[in-house]
Length: 232
Image (cartoon, rainbow, N blue to C red; front, side):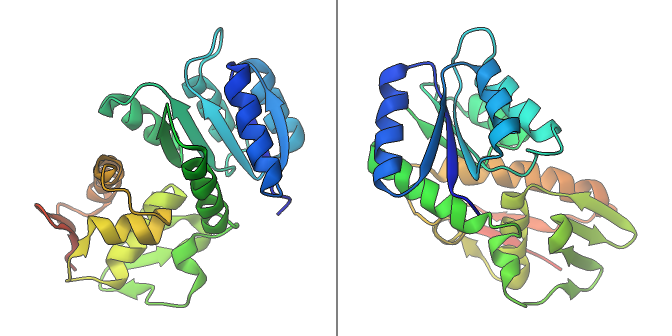
C-alpha cells in the first residue's frame, strides 16, 4: 500500500489545504482540479484513496466516482466524497455508486484526516471485519469475504466493502441488536453524533440487496431508536 492520495477539487484553496495537511501526515499527494484530469490521474497513479469533490465544472464528482468504480484498475480504490450538499438523496447517490465515506463542507481538517486514516486501515485489500477468522456460515447464509459477497441458499449478492463489513458485524452478532453507535465506531472508526443518517443509507442499500436473494425472508431488522439485528 503506497498511501498515495489523489485529491480532486476545483477549489484551489481547499485542494491545497488538504494537500498540505496530508503531506504533514506522511502521505503522498497527487492533485487534480477537474473531473476529467482527476479520472485520468486515478487510472495513471492508482492511488490508495481518492478525495473527491462533487460540484465541479464539466464532469461532476458523481460521474467521476461512477467511472472509477466501472474501471477494472480503479474499481476498489476507496473514495471520500466532499460536498456542500447535505441532503439525504445526495448521500444516497454517492453511496449507491460506491463511495465509501461522505464529508459535508465546511469540515474540520482533523476530521478529514481521521476518516482518511480509518478508511485506509479498513480497505487494505480485504474487508476489515473479514481479517479475523470468525463465523462464516450459519443456516443458509455464507460469507465470501474475498469477493465481498453473501450467499443465501443458491443465490449470491455482491456487496460494497462497507456493506460487507456491516453485514458481517450483524452476522457475528446474529440475534442481538447492534447499535448505530457501534456500527459507526467499528466500521468507520469514529462515532459522530450527527451522522446516523449515513448508517440508514447503507442499511437501506444493504437490505435491498439481501432481500433480493433471501427468498422472501427479511433478515435485517431495524430496532427503532436503537440499531439493527440480523435474524437467522
